[in-house]
Image 1: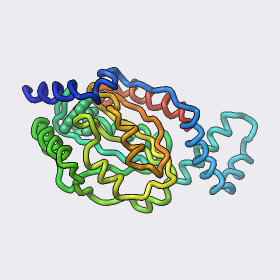
Image 2: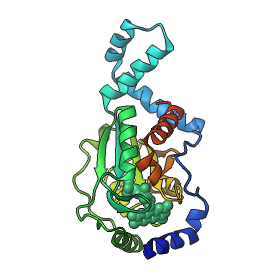
Image 3: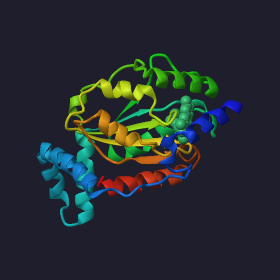
Image 4: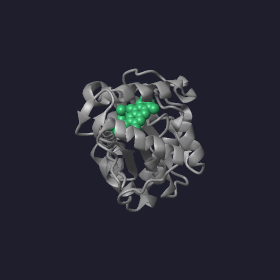
Length: 251
Ligand SMILES: Cc1cc2nc3c(=O)[nH]c(=O)nc-3n(C[C@H](O)[C@H](O)[C@H](O)COP(=O)(O)O)c2cc1C
């Protein structure tokens, strides 16, 4: 595990890491009013697409705020206008041993479940090595090369989605290069993009503003960073953090 030390020494020395948290458990950052407004605007748009359904739902019970919230939640489910796209790697990883399901995938599934979204797992055509050290080497080289590794499959009818949750682990203080391939692959104009990530000490590592710069025509909101080990081993903490974050965003 000597090279684990190498990785984290390098990362700790990076300016990126200094701006971020340090291995805290799941955190749910406060949500800016502008973020709420952006999501609400997209959700209102979705509501107007399905007025008939909503009117039917309202007939059954329009007397309480709770019932209204449930109606709107059902509307998102029917409309399928939310996508959760995420990169996540299983196998051997830092701090969690060898895992069957990646840390980010666990968070992605909670989000998709809560908001009734479709999901897309960003996977490269050439898989990353199962061995952690070997994976670090490949990822480091890809970052240096600004590589755009080819992705398996594609999102069908990307244009139908108004809101895209974009999830990834921090790799070498950045996103895995395949996330850039994903961003290159579609037109994000007028979509709301909501990042989330897992990490082992770097927090979000400046990636939310990097996404904002990379997708200038999208409205990129502040995201949620969760420690990978927390996501992997403390499911109720993670679910609660996701729920609180989504609540803050108005979902
Ligand atoms: C290639 C590689 C590079 C990594 N670089 C960092 C890093 O710079 N900062 C950090 O906090 N964690 C780093 N990690 C740890 C991952 O961000 C963390 O384990 C994450 O939860 C993995 O998510 P996944 O299982 O969804 O792929 C790295 C892990 C790998 C495999």
